Length: 438
Image 1 (tube, rainbow, N blue to C red):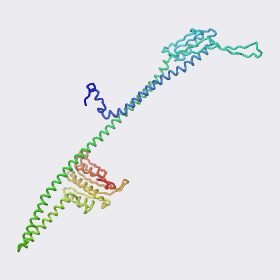
Image 2 (image 1 turned 30 degrees about the vertical axis):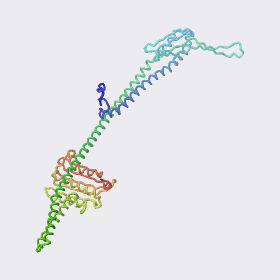
Image 3 (image 1 turned 90 degrees about the vertical axis):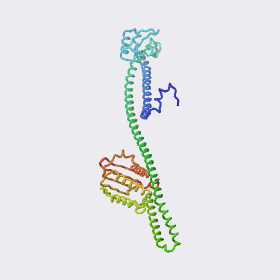
């Protein structure tokens, strides 16, 4: 797809170019950063609102208190004492910017400004200075008193948000520091999580690729082996069976020709014996082909007898290695597919031992075990040979073939080996799932 030239520098920032770790971090960090920014904005805005509410609450209260305390001094003209009282209030309250005491004409009688500076609030708060009069009508018999009020001035209080804002900002910075530390801690945990998850995922992907490559290699080698076996069987049928059948046909034709001659009994007898030998050879060749296609010893002896015969055959070949066999449990009622898979697994394991292990003692053990998960057939092949690194031998057709046979029955395949410490292969085939296995 053609991309405009002006978009080219931004292509590397597009999502398909992000690494998996960066994507995971983005999924975690972006919501956290959004929550952090939202928290900071809310905290700051709420602090500003709290300062405004505090000033709106304290301003009228201060004005009312000053108005009540200024009544006497203003009414009696004691301006100096009034100023002193106002100055004490201004010095004591850091939230006051300026206090003005006004007369009824709203002319300033006393003005006191805070010396600590700061900025004034745009809203001044006023309270009237009220003088209360008590009088009594002396002409009345009851002499009931009367009350009246008179406004003699006003108190105007201008608040300053500076101190409240400074206090709020100190609290805001502390909360911001705590939130930032939390964000950094979450980012560190997210980084560790993304790194471990990415490493685990990459390891899984590598294992899957290795297993996939192993299966492809196994299929390729199996197909090659199958084709080679087909070619060998075809050549054997062509070279041996066809030649034998042709010889039988020629002998039969010769006997038919001799049947009309006199004194040919001896030759007919010889020809008949030749046909018998040819038929016997044909029978042996057929049995050889059948054994190559399926081990008939399984049908004759069962799994235990067939494996024991295989172990005995390897032991009789000598080569300075002793082969031992142990069996535990009943194997006569095993499914045919499980039995032949187990036989082929042991056959492949012993073949690998003979080719590569250089062992002096090999033990093959079969066991029918019962656990909570159901019955299972356990196969163990152990040798004291030179050992190997299972990771380096994973691509071998022998190990891969055994592993695939075990996987077909949802079994377990474990290889324990070290250089110079021998090898132990343990296989567990669940018998309950054998009927459903391919």
